Length: 507
Image (cartoon, rainbow, N blue to C red):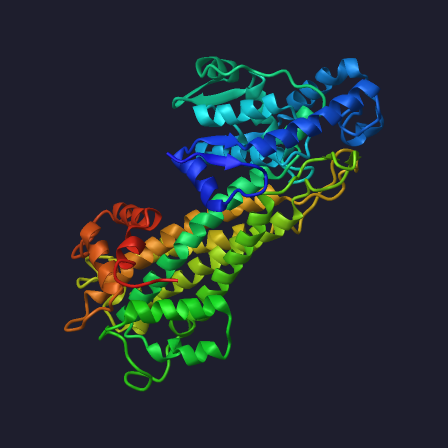
């Protein structure tokens, strides 16, 4: 298995996935080690000289004007962690915790934080040996960083808190002992260096962006199946239309649709059956494309953040300066993750409208709810209900978190980002959208089965085959949620996308 080397500057989104989900081992480069040690020496000098520096020889937040003696620096850092570990709610998944640990280690490896190399190596050892702290989802304002959740991570490093090790939940002390990892005693600046950053919101957002990018091809496949089931007009996807409005996402979606539908006898040309289609078919490139562009924008912001120094104060060894700034503020990500949630929600919105067109006999020209024996059978009636419920929930979740702020720390921290809430909401919207698309795949395949003597497109024929390999035609009513779960699994495992891409190239 390849090792992921971190240096604070070159971590990629793909490597985050490899560590978080595939358990790739992590190590720190020699150059990064040198930077960490050099910065640490400067911190030790400040402590020895009793120089007044925020977070090193002073209290935190509103207590920044309280001087701390060098004899009390260890107590200061320990108190910081135990007092800030105020997270509540369900714990983050183990893959999210792994991403959090990796991102914090990478930020520390940049060499601007003043942590001891041995402390950083303890965090990396926990990651490599599978000691995963229990980190509650809620309690972060997104400035000054993700203080509360990151404190739960550090508790385990100290032999406190709780962790998952070997699939079992246990105390942090038990987990560290069982994994044969020495616990740490925090010293000057270290507690602050470990928790003052945006790594929780970034981890949740990075995993969601990665999954959303994988979803974009599937969205086009589902839409193409619906276009065929509705005998859609392909003129609207002509390159000339999109050349004169050259949004990249729009052009990519149009190309995908034409590739998927190549050779189809289901599709029509304008004027053959009707002059033009409803927006949910005709405007697929414009709608899907806009979400594509939004997701790509958010990915670009994440790529900056995962290799950034986000704690406070920052230590610049070349200049011999310690500067108290605000890189912990999550606003660049909060806005981005709100945008991400909206972009994903729109994919579900348009998918649900296509589902409605397929099950509504006045719009589809097919039997009501796609069942041949309506009345006795309900067919896909309530599948559309479920999709509508998910879409409506997404609309609530898509309300931006970043427009809210509430002052904290006696008004010292008087504007906060709510970026971690924005990231968590985007993830939930993504999960809802997976199920909406799963329903569209089922419904489109069922609608196609009512058409006779037609040939599916080069890409859609493979998608249809995979769906039918796992979900049979609905002849009579049956337990529907089992089919939805099977269809959702086809989405999340990317089985349909992989199968289709064996025959067509998708952007």
